[in-house]
Length: 220
Image 1 (cartoon, helix red, strand yellow):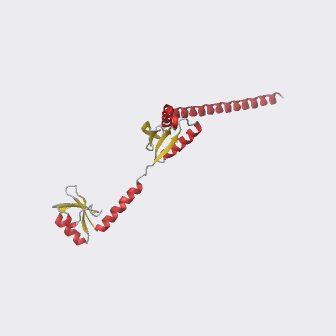
Image 2 (cartoon, rainbow, N blue to C red):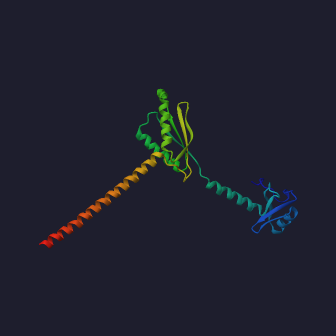
Image 3 (tube, rainbow, N blue to C red):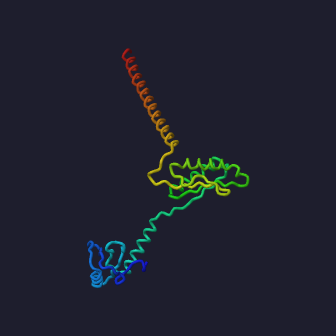
């Protein structure tokens, strides 16, 4: 990093733009060097490709420390994306499939990629079409959480499918899930209306019973 920036007499342009808390000003480089000497700091070129180059009046050691600290903070903020593997056999049963589907959802929600593959052992390579169907089903069931980066492709004895997480807030619900949610909402509304009708009937019966009892009492 020390050789990344030109400092003081290493700056050979005629003029520079000095930036600081008070704003920015263009001055001859000689004047900028004198300003740095008067303040007991260095003239550090931070943007050499600008016209004129941009410089700061700052202690060079302090400047390097700030740059290292900023780079460290930026690295810490970066999300580390891992590739998680999910392995299937060509004849995976539903219980095992659903178990692995659940794990894949968790991996994708955490921001990781998923590499799902079917391993064909021995003569099971004859069932490669079955393996492709399984992986396509897997991708479809994860439509809400992932986008396909690579469709099923056979490499040796393994058929790979690559999935990447969708960005938060843009997940698209599958048609199957939308249909299920619609049916659930319709069922809830029907149950609500039925309960309301039942309550109204009970209330009507209660009111009718009170009127009948009152009428009998009056006749007595």
